[in-house]
Image 1 (tube, rainbow, N blue to C red):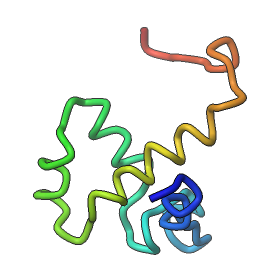
Image 2 (cartoon, rainbow, N blue to C red):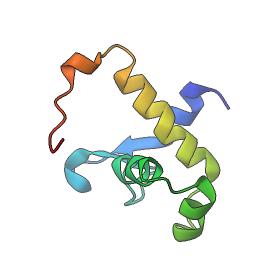
Image 3 (tube, rainbow, N blue to C red):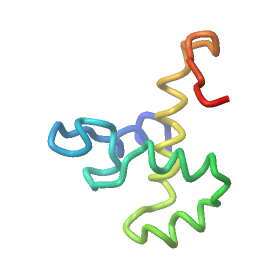
Length: 82
């Protein structure tokens, strides 16, 4: 599945999470999935915890993150709490 097709799984609705990106119009945010991945959860653990998700949904989240940061640099990011 190509990146464009994966990105079609990401939607945004003003009435859900203030318009933040969500997966397939569900109330599961891209931010949540990326946070779980960064905490070390495996794809299988996430899929077990969220049975409505599909493996391509998780891939779509990482493709979305890549698309967002592809032209950014670390110097543009403020990291707090370090």
